[in-house]
Length: 203
Picture (cartoon, helix red, strand yellow):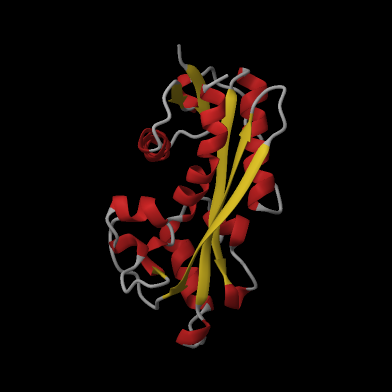
């Protein structure tokens, strides 16, 4: 018998990523489903001041609406020279939600006069697990690096083409998907959640 876990997303790549991570960890007995697999419900807008607040709100909404254990994430880019912005505003930094190219170009413009050694940044991801009747679990992980001046690579999205992880010469968008999974902020956060999900599979 399997336990259904709802990952509060319609992004097929995120669903595949969590399924891969659970399989690699040897976790059996869980069926990961997405928002397309459950009855529609009202999803609250992301109004939290932190990634943790947004992830928890999304997971709570999903668990309350479906009665399933629910996982949600919120992530974005934090730039040292911009005092941690765009942060939770990463997806709409240029004013329109999801305009990756405009967001990327705005950040590059804002950093045009910043020297290379001061272009530190991190991708941050918070994941939340809400199980009806239990205390929620919220975890955050970061992927440190720096920002280059021109986009490179086609494997990523968002700010991936200008983000070079520490210890790398390639941008995140030049890494193979498996390499990115192993190192990325979301991959780290989801792997940290595995022990909690493993416990769910055993209940």
